[in-house]
Amino acid sequence: VARISTIRLLIAMTSIHNLIIHQMDVKIAFLNGELDEEVYMNQPLCFIMPGNENKVCKLIKSLYGLKQAPKQWNQKFNEVVLSNGYLLNQADKCVYSKFDASGKEVIICLYVDDMLVFSTNQV
Image (cartoon, rainbow, N blue to C red; front, side, top):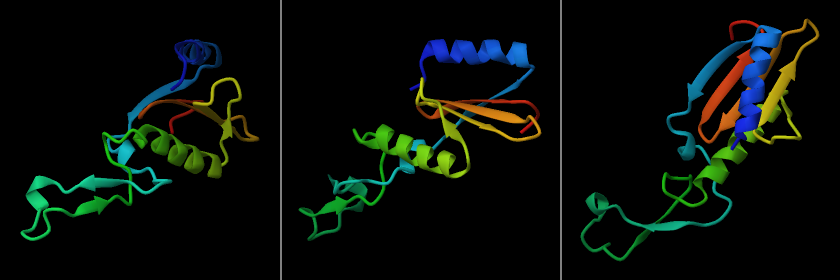
């Protein structure tokens, strides 16, 4: 989670560098994480078949409510963003930036499953 001081600094930078701010919410963020360990859960009541009442489900993806879900989502987001050429900020690990030779810049600030995207032009 990005620190509030980082968010304030980025918002202040928008007026100094004439940046545009976009806000995003990832609706199904916690469903995108890959599980690093085996996790089992009881069957949902509406899916229990007669004769299989004592069976459990092995999860292949993260679910809302899992303790691991926020961490798995962050790892997945980190992997995707870094593979697209963004750099991870060393002072705040929830801030990513990308600059090109023409002077265009994009800064992404992640706050759980919400993002602030700062750019030099419309993205």
